[in-house]
Length: 499
Ligand SMILES: NC(=O)C1=CN([C@@H]2O[C@H](COP(=O)(O)OP(=O)(O)OC[C@H]3O[C@@H](n4cnc5c(N)ncnc54)[C@H](OP(=O)(O)O)[C@@H]3O)[C@@H](O)[C@H]2O)[C@@H](O)CC1
Ligand SMILES: [K+]
Image (cartoon, rainbow, N blue to C red; front, top):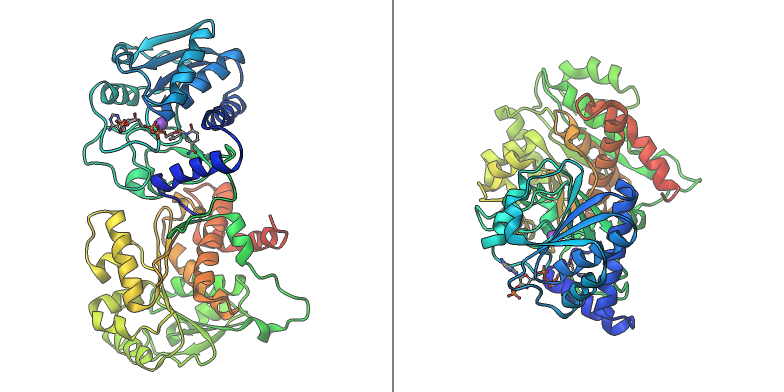
């Protein structure tokens, strides 16, 4: 799914009006109907709503929702700024319609800050949407700050008010903290960054009938199920283990063999035909017992002192390696001789951070998977996640490599400057071992001849989906990286069925 900017969303709106033979007022009605149906299916009928309406079309949506909810038997109060009222023709039309509907209470927004919340009222935020600029002030700010103190359920229409669709909010500005955001047709960029996404609560994408023929270039994408379905290659019945390639997982040191085992098990479960663990000899028994399906290649005593060439193999390096100077030298030597793309994580990245000149030796097309601290060690501190992404885009292009920036919505950054936000995964995955599993998954996909972009995209999506299934079974608190590996099979089954 493409992620359009606020300006492009406006173009999408106009395109739909021009090409689908509907008016902008009908589009507003369609948006209001989608929201009303969602509210009823979620909260039931005959509920009490208080709808805060802003001056533009987001406010117009709120008014149309108020009318539809009232017709369906809900108790509805509308709060709007009576001094300036509504600025767009469609919002004004809906304001006139509201006057015809019996028993909708209308109160001035300036009185809202005096309101004491009633426990059973659901608050709808239709103050500002994609036309919002800068920061909230005056009566709108007071309303948002007051509403944020309520424990009641808060539902934002399209975007939490005060949040821009495309960028970080102005520091210190008021933003509505929603429990749910009902957004139209596609995700907005700000929903996918931690500083801004935190205001959205649970995000629900509603189809309001924007034209599917609309197509403008974009550099930002969300990795969703349809997208993955197009990139996943089903196995054919006449394959043998050689068809699925060989993975070499270079991982582990004395006391850190767990990370190596997780990466190797993940590679095995992701379908690598032949999987070899290159680890220190002290980890031999651990690896052979935990992963009998894998082969073992000794590459040092207690830490790695050499890295096998891995010719014709997909190579993933990093989990549990440690940063011993001999291991660092082995990695430097390997990079200088390796031509084909590789996957790097964890201590491999820490070694690169200590010798940044080595970054230039990373083969083109390689995938590196830093968590926020590892990225900072490699490229320095960024002011925020938007600035970090800009830096990652620049580095991916300069170094001709792919980044997997691990985060709440992990981002895959390509050398061409595209960013793909992952939409699977949960907070239960923010624990030791999860990154080791991701390295194993991506390496196994590279072994199966996925190009680096598809391996990274499919890898992060699959990893997150397996994490979601593990959380469902065990809870976010109790789930382990091994539980995640156990769910990889279920994800493949659903992919093969096209679900
Ligand atoms: N996408 C679609 O296809 C569809 C979109 N729809 C809906 O339309 C919404 C977008 O509507 P929109 O463009 O009218 O903008 P919106 O967010 O209501 O705000 C603009 C108003 O706020 C004002 N304003 C701005 N910043 C301000 C500030 N800091 N402080 C104070 N005021 C400020 C601004 O004033 P101005 O800048 O013009 O002076 C203007 O009056 C979208 O989110 C969705 O809900 C659906 O109806 C149907 C299909
Ligand atoms: K809103």
